[in-house]
Amino acid sequence: MITPPSRGRCCLALLFVLVLHAPAWGSTARLEELTRNLLEAGPGGDDIAYRITMTAGDDGAIIATLSDIALHDASTTFAVDDVTVTWRPAGDRLYSASMTIPAVRALDDEGNTLLRLTAAGGTLDMLVNIESGRLESGAIDASGVTLSLAGGTAPLRIDRLAASVTPQVTAPATWAGLAEIAFNGLAVTAGDGTTVTLTRGHATTRFRDIPAAPDEEIITQGASLKGAVSLEGLSGIDGSGLRGAMDSSLLEFTVSGTGGNLGAIALQYSHEGLTVEDAGLAPVMPQSLAGDVNLDAVPIADLPEAFARPFGSAMPEGATLGLDLAWTWPDGAGSVSGRLASAQLAPVLATGTVRLVTTGMGDLVENVMAAAATGNLRARHLVTYIALFRALGRHDETAEESRLVHDIVLLPDNRILVNDNDINILLSLLKAD
Image 1 (cartoon, helix red, strand yellow):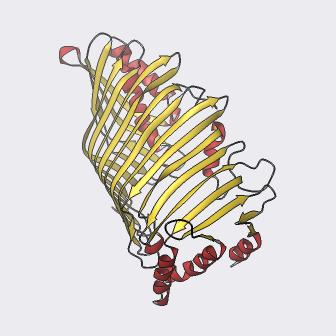
Image 2: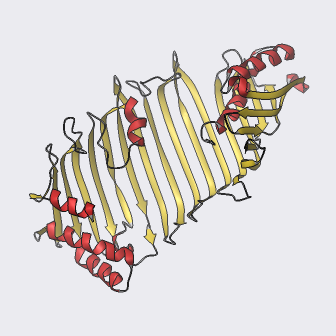
């Protein structure tokens, strides 16, 4: 079974072990011996095959060459092209390392190539403290990155990818620093014909007091991750032919430890220029959106399992969710705000209240019904739900323009009230349909 996200990175991880620790010893003979020990003790253990040679270069440089690198699991072999790492003295107890980015291939039991990850050009550069083996800084700059599958298809392409990290030791066994990644010209193609393209993307993360060897308390009290992800020129088409595009989007996040095994997550999100080429969906798509989402008292150890659960599962026990979002439609606007708490003893997603306010619903309904009359299947599906939405709303004529208000209450006994109307029976009928 192929698992590129985990095992596929193991070969590269071994190269990083060499990069991080190789210069800590003086002689090339001792360097070779200890490098072999580090490789065999790393991910994969006895399943690693390789050859290594060491030579001395000019100006105190040490050149390490790894060849015939392969990592085996039950049914797949990951092969890495030959790699040459050149070390040069770069100051007091510091060495700089540079290497070209190798190609990685996944092979089946018969030697057939299942996938290949390549870069037309690029280098990895690092600065390492030779006494501690600690990474002082690292950067990668690659062009023409392509992931190809058997048969020559390329489901992933990135014109240029750049990343850097500058970690620092802030206390015994904890780290702080800045990580950054940027890419241009990304394109992804799925087997069903779904394609996504992106003009450019950029992400940064500042981290503080993160354990070097994390256990259950990945985000300990006082630790934090803070960063942002921005995208520009996003467009795509799904397997059914639905086309969409977005001018830009921005997600800012903060993850902080609040003590014990608890953390807090704060998100700020916005996007502009979201459009779809479908008459049925276009009226209800939020062309622009901005707002905050805050999740407090989150059991950090439960997060991986929580994210793996199907959508609609309960919130992590003890957590609270606050949200405040506003958006625009082609012919109106909307907002939602509220606060929910996990329901520890009830079989419900959460308990709490949410207020949903919308304007321009009359024009939205007319546009969707007009699309449904032409035979648009998505519009036909939406008509029923929009009619129910309007029927359950409370009209507020006191504002400058007519608003439709929905006060939603999630109760511990598994009931949901919308403007004091119990809608559980209605939801059951819709689910059965």
